[in-house]
Length: 218
Image 1 (cartoon, rainbow, N blue to C red):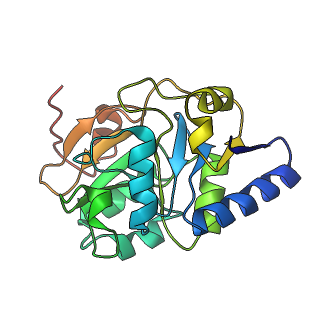
Image 2: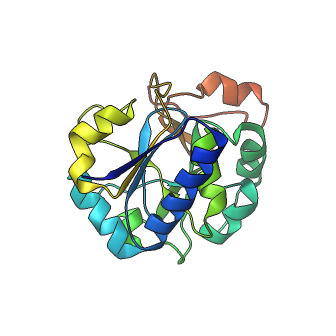
């Protein structure tokens, strides 16, 4: 059974973050709340930790896993290039519920990107998730805390029920918003392509004036 830390004060937040940093640095798996659902975090530069994450989720190895970084300033380390529009989009919508797809840098292992050479990246707007990202020198995975193809969890109790035996630490930050997943925008193509519409709507991105056109197959 995993260790659970209830985050209900500044002191417990510090305790939880410190414990999570230790666990992730040692190759472990941590569940934590995000602006949408609970996520599962491992060191996104550690292939062994990522493989364990795939096993826990029973996830198809052909499906890449997105990562969380602490700020837009950290982005250049993990991608090969940043299109001008994407940088402006990051300034407009990060932190927030927008995941952008970039060409991945060699820093990130191929198991993370499923050998596709692309990676989804987000800066979380959730206080706890962002604090965890800032406390680490590496990006962390932000995939949902669930068995693949099953509903994601919005409460720590659900994480315990479905995944508790397989995790090292659960940070209980209460109930998450849980209505929508992050929006996924592929900025490696022009015009950019909406792969999943979620928290941030296509119209919101267009209203920013950064892109004249966005492809949304839906």
